Length: 241
Image (cartoon, rainbow, N blue to C red):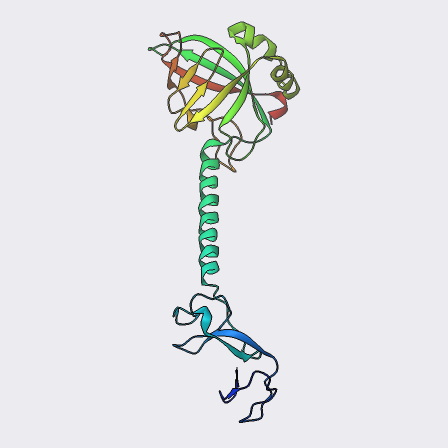
């Protein structure tokens, strides 16, 4: 039976016009009409998009195509809202991590690690070339060991950016990585710098040099004499203004 969408009269399935009001019955479609509020919903809807009454798929009816059934997009709205919240949280997390743990990209530095005893007297110096070639959220860096005391200082006697990059390529690389608050150097002797993460960070928009923070407590594997460390950035001629 066809139900007239204008006067609700039931007509035979082959009727082209309503027997009561004479309105055309063409252009109709099956839909689910909510028994509670009368809202027309698309076939397959589990609940009414207006009052959320559960719908039975067997209770479909013919309705005019002029009445557009409203699909239930509530679930997709929730998904979009959750995705938006997650994206905001991700960008906030990345920005915070970048502000604390990432160094300026594409920056080559010559560094001297100055090791001190418990009275803060200098025991020896190690020279490294640090190359910050990565960008956001990098916590693991590669550093090239140049040498100790005079052996390490000699190649950097004329400190140019070109010379530093060449030394970086020619010498053995070790790892420097930030783990929470500490900074760890893998070799040639393992060094754990307490609260060293702040020494290997730069404030965005301020400067690109490694921070000078005075002496930090450190632990050097196989050398109990070392109690503190100071890290100094050596000026490369190309960086000098």
